[in-house]
Image 1 (cartoon, rainbow, N blue to C red):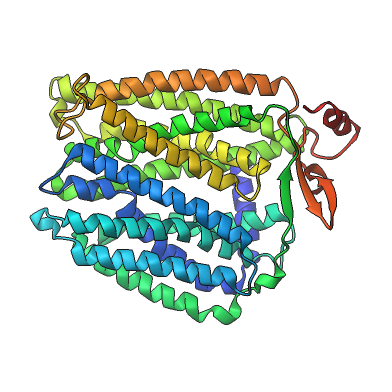
Image 2 (cartoon, helix red, strand yellow):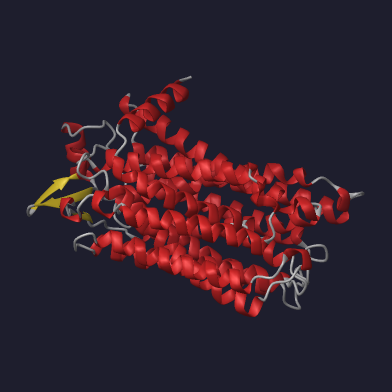
Length: 488
């Protein structure tokens, strides 16, 4: 009941505070998310239905494209925070969208017809690389530009970011719902990309027409955010390492989980089923993430818990959900390969592992993001995405090792591969990762947490809790001063 009241209150607040300028931006976000939902996020399904389908090659390509995407997120995050010229972020969005649009057109030109199960992979992969570059840049610049539209009205960073997150999440959810129920799921790749090109092109033109309505970049306040020095920064790297290991499971979720679903689905229902399972993971992650945020804020207001320590508890719950996810995947994969009637089992036996993967996303992954953003406000999201890129690299390395002559777990397709053994390895790795995290988190929970976030304004250094309280009591008092004096 509390969560429902909070959601309704926040929804009405964001609707009332609606700004006219964002109307021109929401359409571009919609079209961008449509391309992600129907094509990019489930790219492995397009590769798996090709005549010359190669398991190792397809999984490796998907992970490499994700790595390119992460690389552009890092570059774009730095550039977006450094840009200070008039309408600078507007032109960054235009450049990123143009790059992404060129990749989409190139992909359309090289795509075969799904009825013939063909893709011109030699030319299709470069198109995907162009889209990955444009996608990474657009994901950062478009969200940052949306955030700029609220700067003139909301001086507080947290309040402004709440509005940005609300509209971004709302449009993304509506796009996912539309894709799930629309006829797009039945289109072949050539026809689908034609529709996406038209839709995105139209909304891109609408976006450019809103130039005169957008907020001026001169309204931005360039505050310098820094972290006080701590004696043991290596422990922050240990937390980041835990997220990198966790990202290996996410890499498997976007490849092997989908490949298993393809083998258990009828060809005509492959795309709808894959979209349903993918949306289940993302929706579960979103609901859990938002619910956790509301609960943690409520606990903070009651002055019972420190927000950062509650985030650590949240992440720990996600870590053990990851262990459950891997173990469930082991059971389903073993039954599919060796059990009686396993090859004819329903694809919806995979539902629990996609649901658990969503729990891991909402609890652990988003918890790490919140933790990093509270410490490194400008680059917290990019730091989390960097761990995702490292996870993709580790996934490629693991697959190469276990496909060697000493293991031979991976063959030409899913049916002949021993995914149950690989999932068992991920389960053991997740247990070790969760135990390492619990040791690190327990060490943090026993003493003041990390460094204090500080801001420089006009040459004056201010403790972040005076501007955005995140301490144990939610305000700067004598107890906080004592904690600060004892901070290591």
